[in-house]
Length: 86
Image 1 (cartoon, helix red, strand yellow):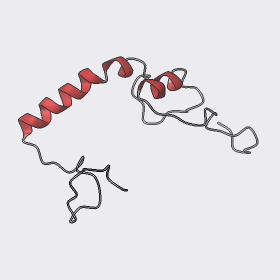
Image 2 (tube, one colour):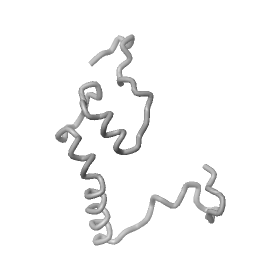
Image 3 (cartoon, helix red, strand yellow):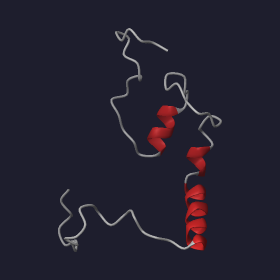
Image 4 (spheres, one colour):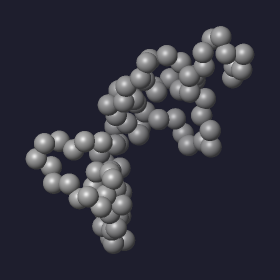
């Protein structure tokens, strides 16, 4: 991973400084609340909680991925030629 020009690099780290920050309990709770607000429009598109989901029956998965800025090949999870089908 090459940082953008002008970015200060900490040679002791191998990843961008976006993870691993230690927060106080209060700051963590504030962060979770701000993330919940930020993702509310996407969260309401998701199905109810379950331990597993069949991606072929999630009607809004394309809309959710698009809203989150995720891209893919656009195909279904299970290839029609795959002998194991849900």
